[in-house]
Length: 251
Image 1 (cartoon, helix red, strand yellow):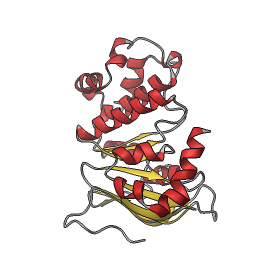
Image 2 (image 1 turned 135 degrees about the vertical axis):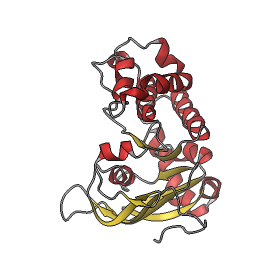
Image 3 (image 1 turned 60 degrees about the vertical axis):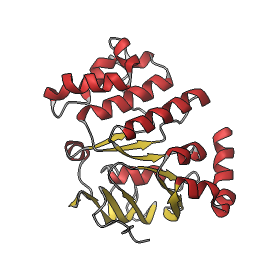
Image 4 (image 1 turned 135 degrees about the horizontal axis):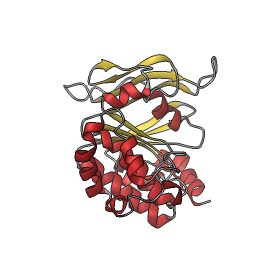
């Protein structure tokens, strides 16, 4: 699949023809592509094992890319180390182990500024406005937080370096329906505040409701792409993917 070229200017983030995997000779992604324009919220959905998390991990330098390339504002960042990507304005929130449980909330947020500690005071005020509960409970250890609160903290920490791009790996996983909805509302507000987002999600229907565009992956390759509204009403996507995804999400 070729990269989208609908706009005259190059997208903010491009993943073009990625072939990648965890074990040499065994690829999870097979010629997989994605573009993210400035200000967009893009969803990545698909069945379990489709390569969704592998795609965002490869863009963040956590999985080796064997073929293809990733560009940020025209700069080739393929296989660049995670700390270099953070310094260039990319934040990443993993699905699991996404906070330091032995540290307090405020210490976790300080870790988010480890590359530029001088930013802490300014960014703490900004993130605190987005997540007021984090400020209210700043001295509480992260290990005592609920799953939803941990997810808020993980997103808050990723925002401490003022990223232009935020990569989210299943932010609603394991949460109650009410907390899932809160996470989606937060993600939407973060996006509207100026952060471009790529979101991997199993709650496909809810994610497509808030995204600008979506990509459906299957067996490590692009299967369908379109606006969130288009994918939600596409008969083939509903039949082949959304029904299964909704069922998996409910079980």
